[in-house]
Image 1: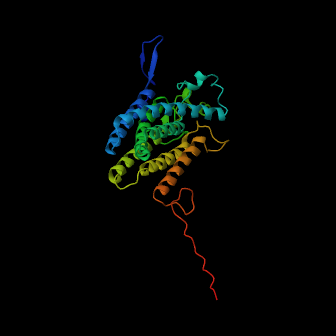
Image 2: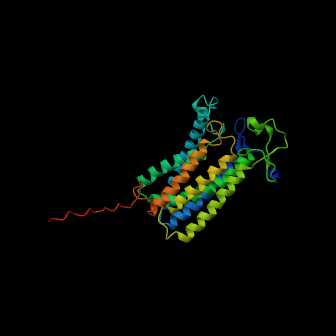
Length: 294
């Protein structure tokens, strides 16, 4: 049972002042990022890139990703009417008070990554192809930090793999349920989906690296990641939604990312409909017959 794996969210405490706790959540995210970067660095070298330039870019992307992830999380809370706890700049940047949103972080990291790549005059699509699978691996590992924190769970369930959540860690609508109530392990659904996506993309990359156009792997990443997050949002009752519907803000953003992946894939291989924005197909001019002179 997953319940037997639950542990104290604090891994250890550094004896500074009153004690500075180090959480398993941060440790697992760090491990995930390190492994993702390790794989990506090897792939960059295989594609003829420079490893030192890549690591400099990683530092910029990771920092900007965390900043934008936090900003997007706070913004969603404010839009949903739950922003009373964010009164000062310190409240906004304190990532231990609330959380972060990976989709917002991805957009922020992508923007800074594009800026860095253009400044260094690098091949954008080579780095984008590398970033996709690396992100899947990093997030798949980091999701287990949500399990230790008893967060990222879904609605009540009687399925055998349901997990126990302490009443103190439940959202308001579930606190009155019996202590033995089990909930969908949403973190597990997403982690397995991400691991599967990483394995699939790595396999496809090895098999078709030389045949595929640059950007293909990134397009597939967007489709897999965005599509998966779209259905996983159905198991996220804690997310701000549009009114009383099941459609959350993150669901819409994830679906748009998946559509962007489909669009990119079609554009790369010139499969967009004629006249569609980005289509490389040219309309054939139909010549009108010249009138005969008599």
